[in-house]
Length: 399
Image 1: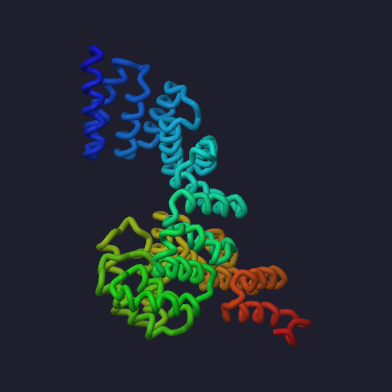
Image 2: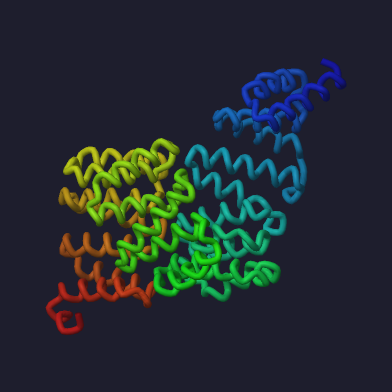
């Protein structure tokens, strides 16, 4: 194959990748590499095709070869892009240590928002909260409307005004953006009353926004306003029947209401929308528990965790089911993992109650105090401390 033919084939392979015809691109790119094993662009094109076909290990090898052949400075745009794709391959293989290493090799000044967000999630997962905060903040500096970082920053203790400041002057000029950010931050740290007030105002302006309505319903449910929450969740479904984010909490509200037919209908609808998302399986687990079939309830919870091992609602489901079966060690593992994902009051409640059931009262009290420190305006956090104190003879009066 001469140089002209190779260049033409390379362009065609890139076009196939852009058209998402990855198997075709992968087959043809292999001929390119066979003709010239020193072209980094050919290896990168092959890697993109293999990543598209789900052959992550082969893609990793292709991207690594491209990086080695490129020989560029670490902050060169092509080198940054290749390291991003290498990190993506490691993530697909659940090799988070290698993913972190690949991303960390990109110089800080050359990291796009995508890299900062990925580093934030990884560092958060590994318990390095200080560096996770810096990465999430850097993501918002690079992309001021990266609202997916808002909840994480709030859960890590960053004040609302600091988060809002990161959204930039243009966004702050639009009051609803600042309101949305503030509401998400307050909800994430368990400050449901003020979050509900702000979300109610936003819902008046955006009455058909499933994102606003679902968050408002979650706040109402957390505050014990079950009927209001159910009506609000129903509005979400009427606006967009295929909306799934947070809808496993709708299932939880239906479970509290013991509405078996509605929960059954919701489960089938969510699974029909996407069986590869965990929310429908979490809903199915709740439905099976209401049907007194705890074995299948656990199977559904495990299916949700197989799809997303860090899905909070699925971890809480597993924890509660283990508690019901008096498998306290397994319950504690599930609740502790939920706490790693989100320091939510629900995760704290599960872990504290498990510690109490195990007779580990000092650990229960320590964790309850942490919950109160993080959510000092949430009545459930005060009740949690009171419950733990009541288990100690000297704590009865304090409780």
